[in-house]
Image (cartoon, rainbow, N blue to C red; front, side):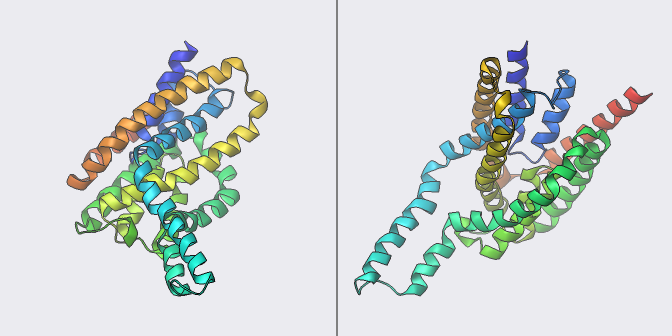
Length: 289
Protein backbone atom coordinates (compact mmCIF):
# COMPACT_ATOMS: atom_id res chain seq x y z
CA UNK A 1 0.00 0.00 0.00
CA UNK A 2 2.84 2.42 0.73
CA UNK A 3 4.29 1.81 -2.74
CA UNK A 4 0.91 2.56 -4.31
CA UNK A 5 0.60 5.74 -2.24
CA UNK A 6 4.11 6.82 -3.30
CA UNK A 7 3.20 6.27 -6.96
CA UNK A 8 -0.01 8.30 -6.56
CA UNK A 9 1.87 11.17 -4.93
CA UNK A 10 4.50 11.04 -7.69
CA UNK A 11 1.83 11.17 -10.38
CA UNK A 12 0.14 14.11 -8.66
CA UNK A 13 3.46 15.96 -8.41
CA UNK A 14 4.51 15.31 -12.01
CA UNK A 15 1.09 16.27 -13.32
CA UNK A 16 0.80 19.54 -11.40
CA UNK A 17 4.36 20.90 -10.96
CA UNK A 18 4.41 22.79 -14.27
CA UNK A 19 0.71 23.57 -14.52
CA UNK A 20 -0.69 26.72 -12.86
CA UNK A 21 -2.68 24.74 -10.29
CA UNK A 22 -0.29 24.42 -7.30
CA UNK A 23 1.59 21.14 -6.97
CA UNK A 24 2.24 21.70 -3.27
CA UNK A 25 -1.44 22.31 -2.62
CA UNK A 26 -2.35 19.13 -4.49
CA UNK A 27 0.23 17.07 -2.61
CA UNK A 28 -1.01 18.39 0.73
CA UNK A 29 -4.57 17.45 -0.22
CA UNK A 30 -3.48 14.06 -1.60
CA UNK A 31 -1.66 13.25 1.65
CA UNK A 32 -4.83 13.92 3.59
CA UNK A 33 -6.97 11.82 1.25
CA UNK A 34 -4.48 8.94 1.49
CA UNK A 35 -4.29 9.25 5.27
CA UNK A 36 -0.60 10.16 5.33
CA UNK A 37 1.26 12.33 7.81
CA UNK A 38 3.15 14.85 5.71
CA UNK A 39 5.45 15.65 8.65
CA UNK A 40 6.78 12.08 8.90
CA UNK A 41 9.35 10.32 6.71
CA UNK A 42 9.32 9.36 3.95
CA UNK A 43 6.33 11.53 2.99
CA UNK A 44 7.94 14.68 4.37
CA UNK A 45 10.85 14.08 1.98
CA UNK A 46 8.97 12.67 -0.99
CA UNK A 47 7.24 15.99 -1.70
CA UNK A 48 10.56 17.71 -2.37
CA UNK A 49 12.42 14.80 -3.96
CA UNK A 50 9.58 14.12 -6.40
CA UNK A 51 9.56 17.81 -7.31
CA UNK A 52 13.23 17.55 -8.25
CA UNK A 53 12.50 14.40 -10.26
CA UNK A 54 9.96 16.47 -12.18
CA UNK A 55 12.68 19.07 -12.79
CA UNK A 56 14.90 16.36 -14.28
CA UNK A 57 12.19 15.90 -16.91
CA UNK A 58 12.69 19.56 -17.90
CA UNK A 59 16.45 19.07 -18.15
CA UNK A 60 16.02 15.98 -20.31
CA UNK A 61 13.40 17.53 -22.57
CA UNK A 62 15.21 20.85 -23.08
CA UNK A 63 18.83 19.73 -22.77
CA UNK A 64 19.75 20.88 -26.28
CA UNK A 65 18.25 24.32 -25.71
CA UNK A 66 19.89 24.58 -22.29
CA UNK A 67 23.25 23.67 -23.81
CA UNK A 68 22.81 26.23 -26.60
CA UNK A 69 21.80 29.02 -24.24
CA UNK A 70 24.20 28.33 -21.35
CA UNK A 71 27.19 26.20 -22.34
CA UNK A 72 27.80 27.45 -25.89
CA UNK A 73 27.93 31.16 -24.88
CA UNK A 74 30.30 30.32 -22.03
CA UNK A 75 32.56 28.50 -24.48
CA UNK A 76 32.52 31.55 -26.75
CA UNK A 77 33.28 33.75 -23.75
CA UNK A 78 36.29 31.60 -22.85
CA UNK A 79 37.67 31.67 -26.38
CA UNK A 80 37.19 35.43 -26.72
CA UNK A 81 38.77 36.15 -23.36
CA UNK A 82 41.85 34.19 -24.41
CA UNK A 83 41.94 36.03 -27.73
CA UNK A 84 41.67 39.38 -26.00
CA UNK A 85 44.42 38.41 -23.56
CA UNK A 86 46.90 37.95 -26.42
CA UNK A 87 45.99 41.23 -28.08
CA UNK A 88 43.15 40.16 -30.38
CA UNK A 89 39.44 39.53 -30.18
CA UNK A 90 36.59 41.79 -29.12
CA UNK A 91 36.58 44.43 -26.43
CA UNK A 92 35.12 44.13 -22.91
CA UNK A 93 31.70 45.42 -23.98
CA UNK A 94 31.02 42.40 -26.18
CA UNK A 95 32.21 40.09 -23.41
CA UNK A 96 29.83 41.78 -20.98
CA UNK A 97 27.01 41.33 -23.49
CA UNK A 98 27.69 37.59 -23.67
CA UNK A 99 27.46 37.30 -19.89
CA UNK A 100 24.36 39.53 -19.72
CA UNK A 101 22.45 37.59 -22.38
CA UNK A 102 23.34 34.12 -21.07
CA UNK A 103 20.34 32.22 -19.70
CA UNK A 104 22.39 31.20 -16.65
CA UNK A 105 22.92 34.85 -15.74
CA UNK A 106 19.19 35.52 -15.97
CA UNK A 107 18.41 32.51 -13.77
CA UNK A 108 20.97 33.64 -11.17
CA UNK A 109 19.47 37.13 -11.12
CA UNK A 110 15.96 35.68 -10.76
CA UNK A 111 17.12 33.51 -7.84
CA UNK A 112 18.44 36.45 -5.80
CA UNK A 113 15.04 37.58 -4.40
CA UNK A 114 13.87 33.97 -4.19
CA UNK A 115 16.75 32.94 -1.92
CA UNK A 116 16.56 36.05 0.25
CA UNK A 117 12.81 35.89 0.85
CA UNK A 118 12.83 32.10 1.25
CA UNK A 119 15.33 32.46 4.11
CA UNK A 120 13.25 35.21 5.72
CA UNK A 121 9.71 33.91 5.21
CA UNK A 122 9.57 30.21 4.30
CA UNK A 123 9.42 28.82 7.84
CA UNK A 124 6.77 31.33 8.85
CA UNK A 125 4.59 30.46 5.86
CA UNK A 126 4.98 26.68 6.20
CA UNK A 127 2.33 26.69 8.93
CA UNK A 128 -0.24 27.63 6.26
CA UNK A 129 0.08 24.13 4.78
CA UNK A 130 -2.02 22.87 7.70
CA UNK A 131 -4.74 25.46 7.05
CA UNK A 132 -7.24 24.32 4.38
CA UNK A 133 -8.82 27.78 4.28
CA UNK A 134 -5.48 29.31 3.33
CA UNK A 135 -4.98 26.80 0.51
CA UNK A 136 -8.55 27.19 -0.77
CA UNK A 137 -8.33 30.96 -0.68
CA UNK A 138 -5.08 30.92 -2.64
CA UNK A 139 -6.58 28.61 -5.27
CA UNK A 140 -9.67 30.75 -5.81
CA UNK A 141 -8.07 34.20 -5.57
CA UNK A 142 -5.23 33.00 -7.78
CA UNK A 143 -7.75 31.84 -10.37
CA UNK A 144 -9.37 35.28 -10.53
CA UNK A 145 -5.98 36.95 -10.94
CA UNK A 146 -4.98 34.45 -13.64
CA UNK A 147 -8.11 35.16 -15.67
CA UNK A 148 -7.59 38.92 -15.40
CA UNK A 149 -3.95 38.74 -16.49
CA UNK A 150 -4.68 36.30 -19.29
CA UNK A 151 -7.27 38.67 -20.74
CA UNK A 152 -5.29 41.90 -20.28
CA UNK A 153 -1.67 40.86 -20.79
CA UNK A 154 -1.69 38.12 -23.44
CA UNK A 155 0.65 39.05 -26.30
CA UNK A 156 1.37 37.25 -29.54
CA UNK A 157 4.57 38.42 -31.19
CA UNK A 158 7.98 37.07 -32.22
CA UNK A 159 9.83 36.53 -28.95
CA UNK A 160 12.18 34.05 -27.28
CA UNK A 161 14.18 33.74 -24.09
CA UNK A 162 16.91 36.02 -25.41
CA UNK A 163 14.47 38.94 -25.18
CA UNK A 164 14.16 38.61 -21.39
CA UNK A 165 16.08 41.42 -19.69
CA UNK A 166 17.86 41.17 -16.37
CA UNK A 167 15.32 43.48 -14.65
CA UNK A 168 12.51 41.27 -15.96
CA UNK A 169 14.30 38.17 -14.67
CA UNK A 170 14.74 39.76 -11.24
CA UNK A 171 11.08 40.75 -11.03
CA UNK A 172 9.91 37.27 -12.09
CA UNK A 173 12.07 35.81 -9.33
CA UNK A 174 10.52 38.25 -6.88
CA UNK A 175 7.00 37.32 -8.01
CA UNK A 176 7.90 33.64 -7.69
CA UNK A 177 8.17 34.17 -3.93
CA UNK A 178 4.39 34.61 -3.74
CA UNK A 179 4.17 30.84 -4.34
CA UNK A 180 5.57 30.22 -0.86
CA UNK A 181 1.92 30.60 0.15
CA UNK A 182 0.49 27.07 -0.32
CA UNK A 183 -2.05 26.92 -3.12
CA UNK A 184 -0.68 29.84 -5.14
CA UNK A 185 1.40 27.72 -7.58
CA UNK A 186 4.97 28.52 -8.52
CA UNK A 187 4.14 27.98 -12.19
CA UNK A 188 1.14 30.32 -12.04
CA UNK A 189 3.12 33.04 -10.27
CA UNK A 190 6.05 32.98 -12.69
CA UNK A 191 4.00 32.58 -15.88
CA UNK A 192 1.49 35.29 -15.00
CA UNK A 193 4.28 37.50 -13.68
CA UNK A 194 6.19 37.11 -16.93
CA UNK A 195 3.09 37.98 -18.96
CA UNK A 196 2.55 41.13 -16.86
CA UNK A 197 6.14 42.12 -17.63
CA UNK A 198 5.64 41.85 -21.38
CA UNK A 199 6.48 38.22 -22.17
CA UNK A 200 4.37 36.04 -24.42
CA UNK A 201 2.69 33.04 -22.76
CA UNK A 202 5.14 30.62 -24.39
CA UNK A 203 8.29 32.54 -23.35
CA UNK A 204 6.93 33.12 -19.84
CA UNK A 205 6.23 29.38 -19.56
CA UNK A 206 9.68 28.40 -20.85
CA UNK A 207 11.36 30.71 -18.34
CA UNK A 208 9.12 29.28 -15.61
CA UNK A 209 10.31 25.79 -16.54
CA UNK A 210 13.98 26.78 -16.44
CA UNK A 211 13.65 28.82 -13.24
CA UNK A 212 12.20 25.73 -11.57
CA UNK A 213 15.56 23.95 -11.97
CA UNK A 214 17.64 25.99 -9.46
CA UNK A 215 14.59 26.68 -7.27
CA UNK A 216 13.68 23.05 -6.73
CA UNK A 217 17.30 21.88 -6.67
CA UNK A 218 17.98 24.17 -3.73
CA UNK A 219 14.82 23.09 -1.92
CA UNK A 220 15.60 19.40 -2.47
CA UNK A 221 19.19 19.64 -1.26
CA UNK A 222 18.07 21.54 1.83
CA UNK A 223 15.35 19.00 2.62
CA UNK A 224 17.60 15.97 2.11
CA UNK A 225 20.26 17.49 4.34
CA UNK A 226 17.66 18.21 7.02
CA UNK A 227 16.12 14.72 6.90
CA UNK A 228 19.18 12.65 5.95
CA UNK A 229 19.02 10.65 9.18
CA UNK A 230 15.47 9.52 8.31
CA UNK A 231 16.49 7.82 5.08
CA UNK A 232 16.50 4.06 5.39
CA UNK A 233 16.21 1.16 2.96
CA UNK A 234 12.40 1.10 2.83
CA UNK A 235 12.17 4.87 2.66
CA UNK A 236 14.67 5.03 -0.19
CA UNK A 237 12.58 2.56 -2.15
CA UNK A 238 9.44 4.65 -1.74
CA UNK A 239 11.32 7.82 -2.70
CA UNK A 240 12.63 6.13 -5.84
CA UNK A 241 9.21 4.82 -6.90
CA UNK A 242 7.46 8.12 -6.24
CA UNK A 243 10.19 10.10 -8.00
CA UNK A 244 10.10 7.82 -11.04
CA UNK A 245 6.34 8.35 -11.34
CA UNK A 246 6.80 12.13 -11.03
CA UNK A 247 9.54 12.12 -13.68
CA UNK A 248 7.49 10.22 -16.26
CA UNK A 249 4.33 12.25 -15.70
CA UNK A 250 6.24 15.56 -15.79
CA UNK A 251 7.89 14.57 -19.07
CA UNK A 252 4.44 14.09 -20.58
CA UNK A 253 3.17 17.42 -19.24
CA UNK A 254 6.20 19.40 -20.42
CA UNK A 255 5.91 17.92 -23.89
CA UNK A 256 2.33 19.16 -24.28
CA UNK A 257 1.90 22.26 -22.10
CA UNK A 258 4.06 24.62 -24.18
CA UNK A 259 2.04 23.84 -27.28
CA UNK A 260 -1.16 24.44 -25.34
CA UNK A 261 -0.25 27.90 -23.97
CA UNK A 262 0.78 29.09 -27.40
CA UNK A 263 -2.69 28.47 -28.85
CA UNK A 264 -5.17 28.58 -25.96
CA UNK A 265 -6.03 30.65 -22.91
CA UNK A 266 -5.66 29.52 -19.29
CA UNK A 267 -9.43 29.42 -18.72
CA UNK A 268 -9.62 25.63 -18.05
CA UNK A 269 -7.03 26.01 -15.29
CA UNK A 270 -8.95 28.98 -13.86
CA UNK A 271 -12.15 26.93 -13.69
CA UNK A 272 -10.31 23.96 -12.21
CA UNK A 273 -8.72 26.08 -9.47
CA UNK A 274 -12.10 27.54 -8.48
CA UNK A 275 -13.72 24.09 -8.36
CA UNK A 276 -10.83 22.62 -6.40
CA UNK A 277 -10.85 25.52 -3.95
CA UNK A 278 -14.61 25.09 -3.49
CA UNK A 279 -14.13 21.36 -2.88
CA UNK A 280 -11.51 22.08 -0.21
CA UNK A 281 -13.93 24.48 1.49
CA UNK A 282 -16.77 21.96 1.35
CA UNK A 283 -14.61 19.20 2.86
CA UNK A 284 -13.30 21.56 5.53
CA UNK A 285 -16.71 22.72 6.72
CA UNK A 286 -18.19 19.21 6.42
CA UNK A 287 -15.45 17.86 8.70
CA UNK A 288 -16.11 20.61 11.23
CA UNK A 289 -19.80 20.15 11.39
